Each structure stands twice: as structure tokens, then as C-alpha cells.
Length: 317
Image 1: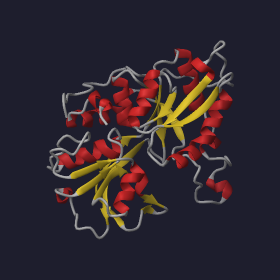
Image 2: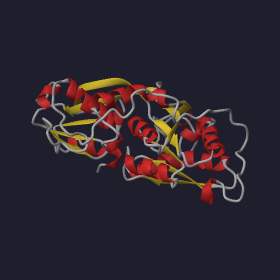
Image 3: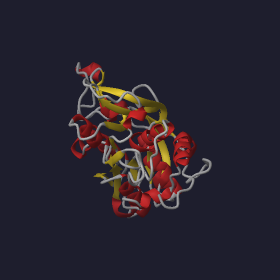
Image 4: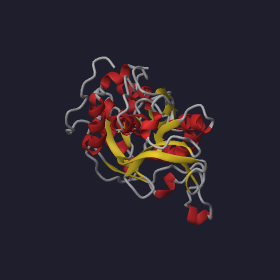
């Protein structure tokens, strides 16, 4: 990759929001709150569009209820770079995105980290390299000369960490993630669901993805096994546009910080215990948020620096 360099040498306080408690509905901000009277909530393409729209609709409706004189609209981004471009230009006001993309956005003055998400009992999650159960791939070194599918090139769990695992295993990653030029493997970048689907159909020999996409009702889906796993990655953040006023940022963040349990539980707003179901498709994957800043994502930054990645990545693809 051209002009590779450390993109953040040390996490500071840039991109940090001070957060206070939520009390009642959010007030208005003159004749044109949020610029055009619309709060644009952008979603990163970690899962298929229809699925994510279904999941986030109740969450967006809750936010809409909390903000007077403005309406909330959900937008599905083509890729992580589009999310950051939207935030940087002010066409998006708040977004859910990945740890690596958020850190890149802060460094490029396109985003400010506000909240960290919680899910499955933890504030951290896992990146995995997975293969089919009957594959002859037993260790990462066996991926030399093989086809590997990754998620979006700016995804922490679906690109950054899998590449780091491959490099640590002694494989040359070449110009990845912008291309597989010079790499010891053939790589393709798409999305978590697409990369895992390519593994299912045999188009790739292994997939580097977030562990969440590999899970069935009882853990890893049948027919697959892990080649390698990295734990302890800080779960994905919520970020806001630097184009918002301090008051607007604060109000949006406070609303999400104060979201009740039912906002995460889909259209019926009920938990599994209440419905007797094992889970519904429109339940959000996370169940809480807490204040966060750039320092929260220092482990991700350290890995990016180890790979020599920089904000140049935002201009690729």
C-alpha cells in the first residue's frame, strides 16, 4: 500500500463526548434542528440491508420519539467508507460502525466516538478465521496459496484482525486489505455475511469474519470449524458527525444512552422470557451502550499500526 504509516501513535481525547443523564424528551434547536430537521442514522453493512433495517427500525423509532422538531431516518451504507464520508460531510448525523472504521474516522476528522455497545454479556467480541469442517486446513500456515474471504476492508473483526492473525502466523499479507497483491493467499473483500456465504458455497477456502456471523442456535454452525480466533476486541461503537453542534451531539447521545430495554427488542418490545421464543429476527444484536472514546479502541489502533495501515485506507476502493 502506498504511503503506509502509523495512523495514530497514541490514543488521546480527540473524538470524545462528555455524556450526562437523560431527562425527558429532547428539546428543539431553533427553526432548523439538525440542519434540515432530520437526524440521519447510518448503518454500516455488517449484515444484509433488509435484516439490518428490520433490526434498527424500533431503535430509530425510539430515537425519533425523544427528539422534538426533527425526524429520524435510517440509512444503509454501501461500505464503511461511505459511513465516514456521510458523517464528515454532515449528510449523516449518527452511525453504528466498526471499531477500526471509527478510529480511522476520528483520525481523518470525519467522526467522533460517543458510545460503546454491549452484547452477549460482554463489552468485547471475537474475530475468527473459519473453514469447512472437512477442509484440510489445520492451521493458518495451510492458507498459503488458498482463497480467503474477508468482510469490508475497514472492518476490525472481518479484515484487520484476520490479516493480523495471518501475519503473525508468518504469511505475507502484501498490500492487503486494499488488494491481495504480494500476499501469500488470494483474498476477496465484501461483507461478513457475504464472506461467510462464500465459504458455505465453497468459493473460498476460509473466511475471516466477526464470530457473530458464524453462530447458529448452539454456537458455531454445523459443518464449520475455527482455524484461529482472537478475543477481547472492544465491541463496535456509535459515532456522531463532527458537523453537529455540541448540543445536538449531546442530545442524540443522551437519548441512546437512556434507551429502555424494549428499544432493543424489536417491534414487539418484549424479551424472550416474555414471549417464550428463543429470539426474534428484529431484536438488535446489542442490549446496552456506555460512554466511550478513542482510548477505548486503543487495542484496535495498535493492531492497525502493526499492519502499517493509515487513513489512506479511506481513499481506497
